[in-house]
Length: 127
Image (cartoon, rainbow, N blue to C red; front, side):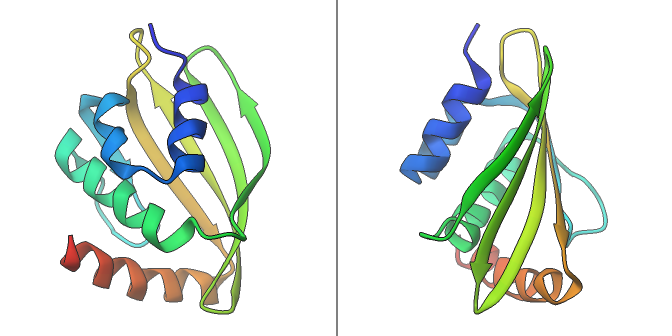
């Protein structure tokens, strides 16, 4: 079994979205704050997370708190995108093998959600 959180932090820190394939289960689900329905499957989850890495992970991005259990974790983060402060949480669940089965993102404040919606849409179209 892989150490899911250690691998996630390494991928996030190194900003290498191509490594997401190593950590996502085939039936992974992405729950985005800017899309109404959950996105199901490894390929679409990888695409959303890769786009999010490009949009969110800048020099101001940092995880400020983490709560974890046997097969899940909640990571609170802060960053600034397009001059707007963003505070959010990544809620991550994984299976017995340590592969991520669900990645859920929640954001605040509303201005940040609107900005991220626009930027993620553009990035997803480009990928």
